[in-house]
Image (cartoon, rainbow, N blue to C red; front, side, top):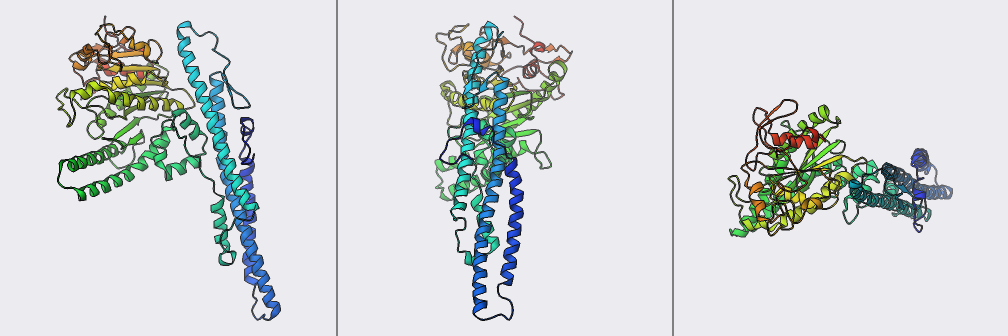
Length: 586
């Protein structure tokens, strides 16, 4: 170890190995067991039957002194055993963090120097001119991510080193046992030493950046990760960049805790209620969140009460006016293709999220079939992301939400707030994985606006499909111009030719709202936007597809299982098989 007063460098940390420490634990434990046996024997012979007088008293005092020394020694050995074991375990996380960082560097043509600096040899040879900007942007993002990973590995190493030195200092200074040895037992002394020797777990990065979160999580040992999920799930469940399996376990653990908290809050407000409208509205809001937890429970569990192994609860947020959540179908940690769907207006966890999750389950299965038959054969995961609070407005028979007005729709603040959260969520999926999944963003209605704003920053999204869209920009396009004045498509940080749009007949949001120009030009007429069909069609494999109509039929499937052309097209893009998508006739 370097010592608490010395800074650790990358060249030192890459040589750390847990093996010898882990082996030492067994040897120390054997010595500890021998010590405890000697102490017990000594206590047993301290006052033999029938022996009295000055010599007996002196012998008894000496035996007790030795026993107390053995107690102190037991505490020191227990502290060292625990600390060495914890350090050996923690170093496995450091080794994993180093391996992931170096593997990423190698995959993308970077190198990590002995001082931890990320070295970029420059643009790879042979990159086409029209892709150089995208490649340069991606390389800049990867260089930043690698820098974050190096930083988090070193932060974890410093934390381990500092903790271990503190324990060793206590042992060497004889301050291991804080209680009076004469009033304790050997077992208590060992327990006190064991507690003293335990190491802390490194806190997550304070800024919550997805890449740094991913680097922090990767540098923790598996045991440390499990301890955090068990003891502090609130630090894990909503942390973008953490592995999906961990977020799922943490959020499932939070469900009953949040339900208990809300019930207590409901009872407290009810007890203080004066019958007035403010208290009544507050109670309605709490009840809506409780109903949302029930809805999430139903979505995450099978009819027999067991957790659905095909789903992952990737976020659970009860701050704000309404509950927010993200639910995946498929394994986001391992799927070759991942799609993140953002619903739009009138969407709420307790009202219609279950329908969206079911729709995305159908997309997941259809896309996986297309990938198997026409693509790379990779697995697929879909995520229904309702991590924001979209407005509720009258459309398709929906009434106006209490306290809302059409101005809330035109304001756009909900989309801007949601876009920040969605961008971080998408970045987190990429950062949490050592490979680079094919990531597709799906946005419906107001969710397409949220998605479009989110994609103005580099999120790692490879394809995007907008449907029922009022526009994809937070910058008004005035005066209204059918081809757009702001060139909104060029603002999206997705590869050229990988943005798609679906506009069904009879959809006022897709056809009428864009004419206002509030959210930029219409995606249906935007130059460079790939227009996909929503009309009745026959798929390349002979499947009959029905037309979608209105604002809410883009992802629906008929009762007999017949798919719409829009659903099929969404599946084709998610599967990475755009060549079999059905385009809109020009």
